[in-house]
Amino acid sequence: MVFAVAALAPGKPDVLHPVDLPVARPAEGEVLLRHTAIGVNFIDTYFRSGLYPWPVEKDLILGSEAAGVILEMGAGVTGFSVGQRVAYTIGNGAYVSERVVEARHLVALPETISDEVAAACMLKGLTAHYLLHRSFVVEAGQTVLFHAAAGGVGLIAGQWLAAKDVTAIGTAGGPEKCALARENGYAHVIDYLAEDFVGQVAEITGGAGVDAVYDSIGKDTLAGSFACLKTFGALINFGQSSGPALDFKLSDLAAGSFSITRPVLFHYTADPEYLAAASEELFSLIANGALKINVNQRYPLAKAADAHRALEGRKTTGSTVLIP
Image (cartoon, rainbow, N blue to C red; front, side, top):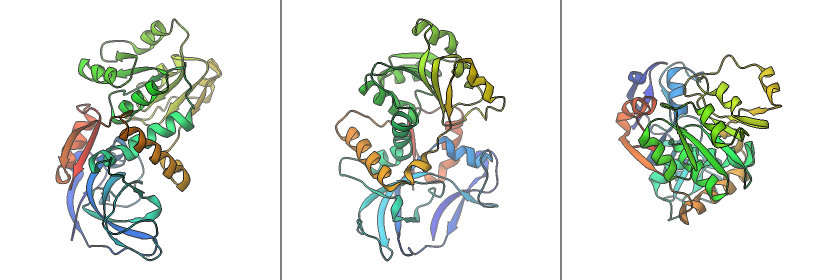
């Protein structure tokens, strides 16, 4: 049997419970993986809580990134071998000790990337990649605002922005998280628990505003994010940890001829060429020290509910992984 953690029904972390699954065999184009590390992300809590629609009636297995070892390959799989270390990011299904995955979603792991780092950076690192290279193409000399700067995506993005000579302003909650963000590339960090980020951004930019805002918070920040933009600025909303911003109107963009986008990682990674190229760039930057992946919390897979409580309670920094 395969050990898994599933959400019995939409609800709070208490709905997560252990289940036993039969061992699956890979079909054509698939591989069977033994997981070694599994990433935990806010998208997992969105599905668990019911904020995102469920694809099943009960016992939804969460988890959208993981690393592991290939145990068996189905017919037609090329470019991989049994015993090889690989990683992937796809929607749901990763909170298991073993699973079958289509080979087209896999990337091979170089020796320079550990399993924990891979499980912590596939979703978050590739999210940072498309945010900075596709959703809004940042250029040296620009200034951007990044909410949740001390989170998993935020810490990667801060380092990447600094490497591109972009002035990054981050928001984080509390002195410790603000200090962590500063250590990871942010030129300015605003403690949103003690300061008004809109006023602080205006002061930092001399009233000019920022070229772009990267907002994964949603309801609590969206209006303020618009207020921080310069004319023709862009707002990239890629999450809603505080809930959906239901009062947004298309006419809100007219205040500064703003643009807004709501990108989804899996639309990008569905392109094999993008997945391969973006992963290679991410792994190279990690290997040469330009990017550091902060795996700051580790839980046994059986304690996934505790990981969710910590994440939603804003008690985590960087990345969290589950160990089967």
